[in-house]
Amino acid sequence: MGISTSNGVFREGTPTSDLWGDSEQDILMDSSSATTSQPISPPPASPCKKISASAAKSKPSAAELEEFFSAAEKYVQKRFSEKYNYDIVKDVPLEGRYQWVRLHP
Image (cartoon, rainbow, N blue to C red; front, side, top):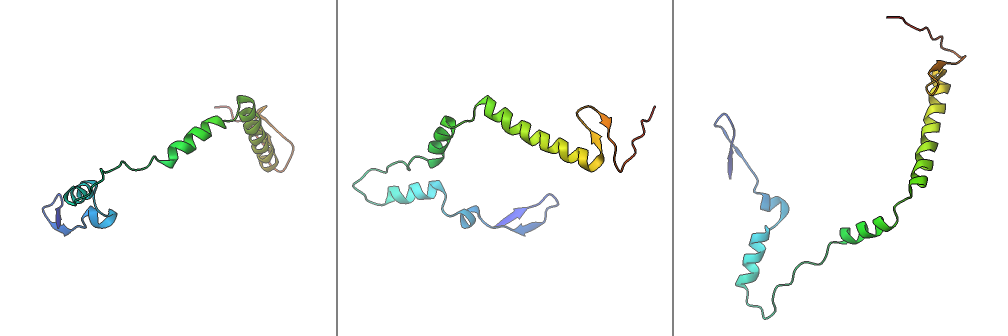
């Protein structure tokens, strides 16, 4: 199988059925040509739907989310102030190893 590129040169290509197995149409054709007494049943329900339904039941409340993110935010603020001796909440420099100078444009 060849695939044309924009400059007219052909290169070798791999059919997608070789990569991903038989296509859905091939499976349906094979099953319709075979003589079976039972009708073809649809595939089983996806387990992802079950997970998303159970995940919807266990969503954290707004208070839990606020508590989680505020703790993370406080940790980042503390780490930044220790590293750069600057309070990002109050927007003021702190005493430490860096000397902050305000620039006037």
